[in-house]
Length: 273
Image: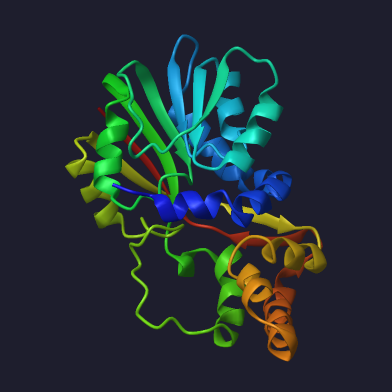
């Protein structure tokens, strides 16, 4: 079971980009983080693992709730920032580790993730391995994205630039490792069942996200994260300019007095070992 492509991706420019955008991303995802952290119910005396912890924001929040937290991620650049944020706290530790194959011990009451579990090459096997980290009755709690069409904060810009981007040579597998791999609720449930989890509950949460204060800020952010970023990396000259203008025109009607606020849709997933 190899996640080599993801490891290479998140240790390259993608990891550096997410480090640079960490503050913006934290603000954007704050409404989702709040719901997920509350549902996870971490408490004093518990040991928790934060899978795909990235730059450490949710690990810090779990530790603030009283848990002793181990944040794991495959991205060294993001973990470097997580360690810097944590400082010398003794209730937090971070490791470069692939949760799909990491050797765990069954001593944790909680496994948590905020958008960090959709990138496994073999998701059922990965979750089966993750389950070995939990005590009997231990909790799994994570959030993952629903389909792009249900996430205007990403899809508005993405749809605008799509006509300008190269068409894939073969059809894209919607279940391939990536942000939307678990958009299909039935597929997601089947993965967790095969992995051995019980009491599986998948809830829809649909918060409004504050993308930016202005249109310029929205374009700058989406040029870093999401479909619009492909324009900067793959297109040149007039085609690039037209694609960016199309994205700008698509986002412009959504700029209000309080900034650019767009809908999102996630699955909030809980289960037991």
